Length: 415
Image 1 (tube, rainbow, N blue to C red):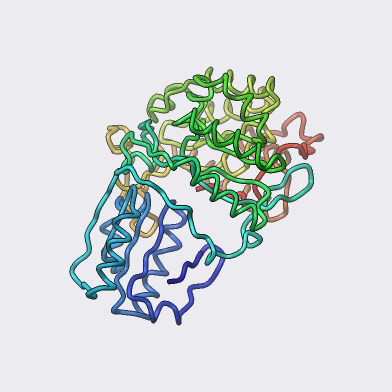
Image 2: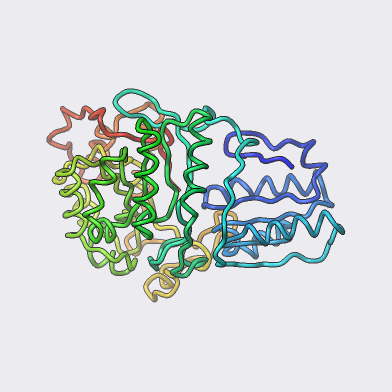
């Protein structure tokens, strides 16, 4: 058995030719885009191998994956079905048509075996205060108990979440620390879906590794509901909290079924300042409901809340992705702007009713890509985005010096 990460390494032809089962993990949109040409290459190298795709993006893209030659498609808590498939193929070479299965069963997890993966040095580092920290990754929970319309977790988990036993999480982190990790990213869709479980883990983690830092993702709604737990994050080494704010327009937030308001975001941002915690908000600024005034209002609010350094520039350029099976398709005004489904891109294409906003989103995306090639600071790039959106210089443009204290991952893209 071999484990390859195609995001940082090649597909080894010799191992592909010898394999009876080749399984691709598709947890994200980008991973699925990377997998598609790899599946085609695998089919050329080894026509007898059974190909499986598993993860959040596998079931929603079943028709496309089937046409590529994928036999089995698994979602949710996929481990038992994947193991059963491997055992069946090894015992009798079963070539029957594959299945599509989404399981939400509660599992007793095993500690992940990461020994075949590239070293942590091959992955993006964390930058903080002018230094680098090597980053590991784990999950304390899977799924989410919320039903945000645009979220890719929802079509699979439908409001359910599953806990990874805390001793498994801690042992996984211990092994990564032994391999050189100095910072851990918790990849849970929402770290506070199980707040008591989450806080227990970080307290025990900090007691064992007081030098280790970490980051988490938590909904604005949960940051308000569990605000009494925020000092525990600060005191156990949390460097920043990512929160999917998505919009600062209440009508858009209602369309997305986000469960928070503009004022909620403002309250959270101010409480983080008071607690000396770093908030890393993410956005989907370009939706079918975006207006010029709304986009400019977002930029003004980020200045008002002193968050220009906290927001990765790509977050000010993103368009709403509408994948297969999305709850967004329930909305009449979404269906009105939809074009054809683009299988290779894995999304429903859409056009804004105001073409100038499509032009603006394309211009901002080009600007961000170009500025990041030249390693522009977040604050400097924000200033150039302001100039495009307002047609005039930001009055503070002369002093766009990024604050080094804001931690960030070296990889600027998010999806």
